[in-house]
Amino acid sequence: MALSTARTTARATTRTSLKSRRTNRRLAADAGLLFLAAAFALPLAWVVLSALDPDAGLKVQVPDGLTLDNFDAVLKPDITFTPLLNSLILCGGGTLLTVVCSTLAAYPLSRFRSRLNRPFLLTILFATSLPITAIMVPVYALFVQVNLIDTMQGTIFFFAASQLPFAIWLMKNFMDGVPKELEEAAWTDGASSLQSLVRIVLPLMGPGVAVVTVFSFVMMWGNFFVPFMLLLTPDQMPASVSINEFFGNRGTVVYGQLAAFSIIYSTPVILLYVLVARRLGGGFALGGAVKG
Image (tube, rainbow, N blue to C red; front, side, top):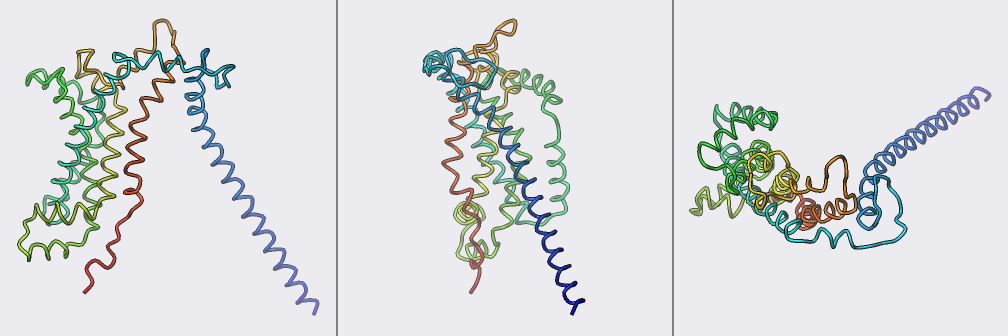
């Protein structure tokens, strides 16, 4: 009887100890997540508060009075509208070209087996690790030779080329999840490979296309170095380069206007994500697509 009571007490003690350890681990994880959330929230809070603060500085502080003067100062064609339009043209054109080319490149890699598939994939994987600064000098020299320097189309081509390697990898992985039997049925009905790609594969891998679109657009939208090097005319500069104008000489910065411009500059990316959010969460509902 005493032995049984001792075992019961030991088990209860062990359960209490395990529960206490789990609680401590959960609290530690929650504390870590809260710290990371604060690290991300503080810069965002500074941007929002400084955009409404007439005397904005480097500190995160609640403004004494709210004002929209900072937005009025930056909402001008030469400061905001023209650079944003240039950014939309460059990033939109580059994203469209990236999605189309990565789809056409990923399709044969996903659907046809060849000895060259793996070497090609490893080559483009290596291309993703090349720093952009290491290839800008030969690219600049090449663009000068082919008269693409200081042109929007040349910058769009380079944007697309720089994003293609990783976009092909992503697109191929998503395309592998679409059953080939669906295409074979379409081929039996007389469809070509291009028709089956457009009418069957792409609609079924909508989340994959959305991921590649968002990833490519965001990477191009925040790119400063490429347009800064390839574009020379101020009227063609995108917002990622024109934001540098808010940093004056000798460390003088108009923080309120910088924060207001940052909010406006971030809006297209947020809107793009909202538009494709449903696609991103849709998933591939292909479990029973080939049954029967």
